[in-house]
Image 1 (spheres, rainbow, N blue to C red):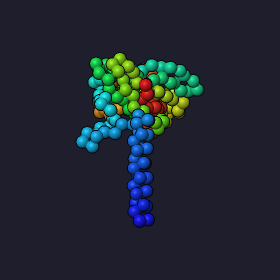
Image 2: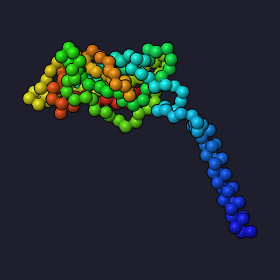
Image 3: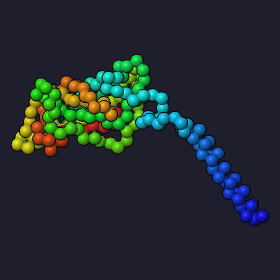
Image 4: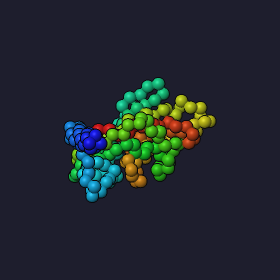
Length: 183
């Protein structure tokens, strides 16, 4: 009899925990996919933005103490909403032919948010550029840069964004860093 009461109490406690867990999901907006639903990299029906859905550009913002700051902007040019999440790729290019100049941008920050872009909306990635003249010429090996090569997150195709400046040919000199895209 004691054992039977203990089992009923245990099962009642398990059931109560399940009810509280479901109520918590409901209250905080967490949705679970049915077991038969395919899982994707996003948690909703909005598809990830492809390179063809987005147009990249750059806007300078500020400068000081041997650094320049700006944002790479990705504008949704499609006629449907799509999702951008995380960092893309960013590097200087030059030589008039898109040849990479120096090291690719370092990734700053550790929080990548999911950004849903309606048609016409933009996601922004903050960019920090160290001025090449901060380094000795022999180490930097300064060279003209035509602009940026920008990769949309999770894309293997790139876009050219004009941004004439001076970069370093030495791959061990890291002039660029950028943060994850945000809305």
